[in-house]
Image (cartoon, rainbow, N blue to C red; front, side, top):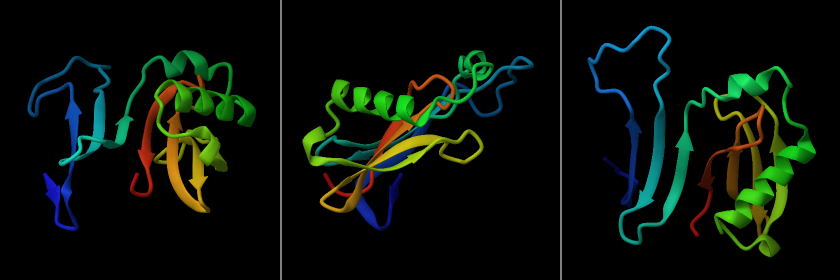
Length: 134
């Protein structure tokens, strides 16, 4: 569906369960949210909602700030999300309780630019979102 304020952008989600389907007890549904520029195909948001493996890491505790920033830097490079030389780490959030969880937010030219969402116990990629036009 298109939002009225951005007709060039598609927003949506994908779930691995069909509405009305009865699932097994204890089953955790996965979902993925996305935002895609309908003209260029660029991804503005890609986010996973569930990762059962995080429970395995929970016994070890949350990753440190340094581990989080290192993980985000690795994903930034591996996925070529932006030129690292143009970015500054603005905010590091280590959180399991918040809606968006752990993240590293980068600024470019003094403005929020890119947020890399990280699973708080493993430091693995959960998703990313751009805050301004690319």
